[in-house]
Image (cartoon, rainbow, N blue to C red; front, side, top):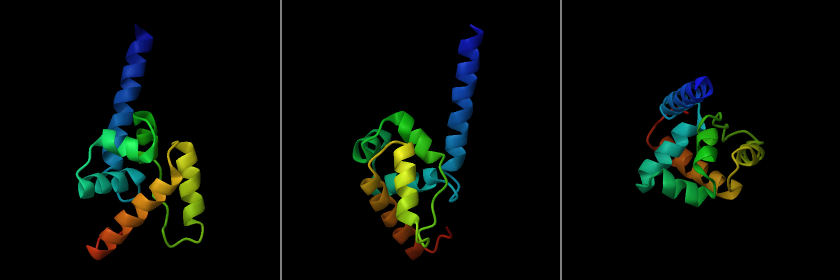
Length: 109
């Protein structure tokens, strides 16, 4: 009984952190949410496109959004994709699109 309570509390905490990450441009969760809004897709569609499961999507959301101006941007994305795990090429594409659109809209990353 106690283990179930601890597990449930941990799960609730993680979900709270994910919600916060989706509101903060520091986190990849923000970029994932922006992409979902741009394409009017839900979590299920995003996981299919990224070739990952729901748990991996949560892990990705809590990662730091890498600096697209860095010479190691793609290396960082590949490391994140491996951590997820997810399709690294699709993740790079997603981030490039979100970053491009956000810069046109004047959002500070």
